[in-house]
Length: 401
Image (cartoon, rainbow, N blue to C red; front, top):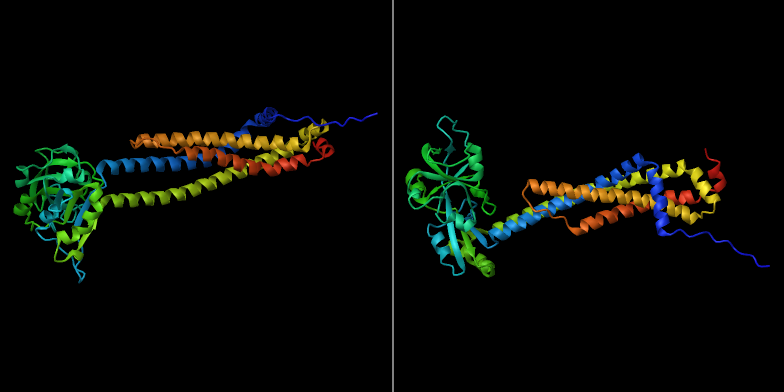
């Protein structure tokens, strides 16, 4: 006679999935709360990366639109540590550099005070600066007019002014017009225009801009430029940058500061990325907390279902099949949390980007990585409960209340 050795039936992947889903459906509230813990961590990570990416994409588009070929020349400090001054001919000399396509300038009117009307206390100046400006400034720095018009050859000779965006807000002006006036050193200037924010020339946002001639005749401006703006061919920016200091002030090139405004925006972007990494760390902590919740849920599930485990073992289920069942439950629970978190994070990113008038950018890697992270967390969290369930003796499990 030959003896036949019995072999346990093998569970197909579909069967393991169905058994795992049964365990979740029998305790829906607990499963939902556990999945929610995972979802919050994933949503935080997706939203942080998505909002940061959307902001960075918008900043990149802004820089691309405004150009990275804008260079500025301003006075630095003297060898003795005092404030330097650009020569009167600095602007025209910079304009003679071959690759320079456009140039313009502003000149600070020192000690000029700005008030909305004569009844404002003298100390309340709102930190607003007054600058004499050339007529081609908007085209050079990429500034646009929100209300009214820019100065022209006629208005630049008379007390007319254009306000920066922050200046208009601080003074309470929503629009420009012939009836709108601002006092500069107690001299009334008609507000002919209001600028939009100027990303590459933020000093204009808190400024009152007046014509070069009017600044001299009405405010005693000495004619020295304090910032010269230049636009060069992209391929020649570094070459122009190398000679700007010596060209603007040949007698003391070390007293000239040359900068690239787009570099400041890039530095701001880098600072934002550092903050993003911090928020990602917080999201990872939230994800870890969610994983602890999954582990706790699965341990309790094993304790509550000892009778079920004993019955399955007595009917021929192997330890491996019991491990598969509980591991599948843990992975399904984490997958539900991961998918829910990705959806919530994507929705939060889209909502915030819409409110900021950005395009929504969510890198594919964060979506795939979010779900992958939840499965890894779920697998680790469910491993111990699954092993514990598989090692439970059938007789002990059946005797459990």
